[in-house]
Amino acid sequence: MADIRQRSILKVLALYLLLWVDPLILPQVFRKYGHSLGPESLGFLEEILDHHEIPMEDVESSVEWMAKEYNKQDDAQMKVSLDVLKRVYDSFQGTDGQGQGEGDRLDPETHIHFIDSFNMPLWNWSYEKSAFERSAAALTLSGSADSRVIASRNRHSIIKQAVLRNDHFSPSTLPSKDRERLLTLRSTKQLLGRAGDRFLLFGMLVHSKEGKLCLEDDDGTVELDFSQLDQPSEGLFTEGCFALIEGDYTEDATLVVIAIGHPPCETRESARSIFGHVDFLGQGATTLQEDVHFAGRIRTDLPDLRFFVLSDVWLDVPETFIGLRKMFDNCIESNFIPKVIVMCGDFTSKGIAQGTGKDIRKYQENFDSLADLIASYPVITRTTHFVFVPGPLDITQNVALPRRPLLSPMVSRLKSKVPKSHFASNPCRIKFFDQEIVIFRENTMARMLRNLVGVKPDVQNDDLKRYLVQSLLDQSHLFPLSYSVQPVLADYDHALRLYPLPTCVVLADKYERYQLTYEGCHVFNPGSFIGNSFGFSAYIPARRDSEECVLGMDTDD
Image 1: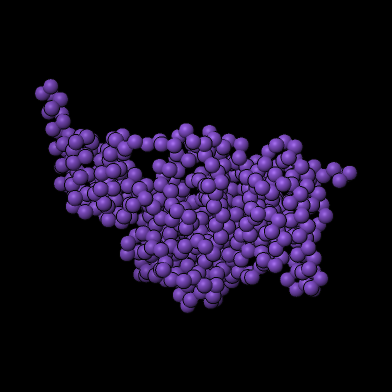
Image 2 (image 1 turned 120 degrees about the horizontal axis):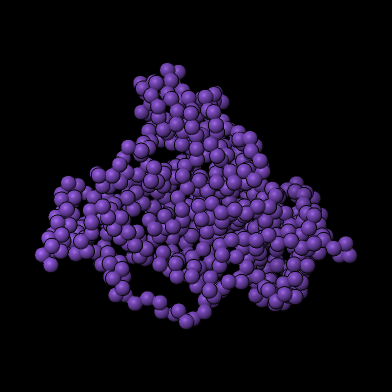
């Protein structure tokens, strides 16, 4: 007994010795997750560590767990609340009963939300608080003089704070940990007078007035020289994207690039563990505890639920209606009614931006025919949500991203005959329990490949698909290109963000079909509805995966 007591005393002494060597360890861990510790909360944590006799090597991980769990609480504040911290500890001890309502079957209808880009709140990144702050200013289509600057600064800050939290850049709070392999980011202003040195920089790829490719950060720009780059990194690099670049600074004030890469992607779980209390979608933020609970219940209660996604639903092509009728008939015959059917444009096979009144009238009549077709299936009309997302050739109020929904006069019969119809912006989002599904209709692959700069990979189709997905998710943005390539409504640039990482991203594109998962985010392209067959994709929330669906084109149809 004396030996046990002596070992316990030595552990506590070791802990206090550690805190005496570096008294800022606990505050540093919480600061890493955007919180500050007051004296009472700090004392409470020290009591917990003392009470449980936490070994010195486990102090950081234990406190980090507490910081993450604190973020899961709905009433978590930047300055750590002692009451909330105690609740987290009590939950760990098993003193707060959970699991009520386990016997009730999940009702998907009450947990599905369709979110328009123009209804999403704007959250700006605050350097001073190292946290997101909700903008109180009214957002407009024209934006203000500062809107574009704020949008670019937000993109830069959001990616950079995630990079600095990455294991390769974030030092341990424990002085005993090995820091030799850590990477250190430098600024362009630190290059001056240091020719011959090697630097790792982070910034945006831009072209100077002279047409030369440069890297731009908060402090300035530096010209890039790719002549010594042997092997390009994976991914697609375009003007307007952010990159990590390692290179040697020369007397000519250029950076000779020896390595280039996209910033590392932060998983949804990691981002939610820090910013789980932030309601990015404007539909109420769920805690991580609720997310885990819902994920398990969806797998058990809703294993067969499906979302159908179709793209290039050309209503001016007769075969489209044949394919839609075949799809609906198949659903009725198999008694399998999808919860959601997403129809992405283009809803015309040819642009009518400068068309005659006859073309526009025909465009509206095609939607009227679609309304009559859907209404002829009463079970589907009553049960299924229909989401209509405009494409680049469709008639909307604006051509800049995000695009407004289809014009109301064009779809008036759809609204009256299909009660669960939703006319969404492009992009739009579906919040389903704990899942966030982003739907974006753009010819992204072609536009990215047309605007490559500096590094042009020589890869096959499968690699291109992976590179595209990796690039967009690493950039935390659906369209990481210069505004000169595609106009973006600066006040609504946040609607194109992919941070925190969604559960699923639909990249509806004219490019061939594909599906893959990167850093836990499932990405797929349903491809054009009409081809050698009728093709679309089905997303399965229970598996967080998708599957290709193909219906044959029978000659007698």
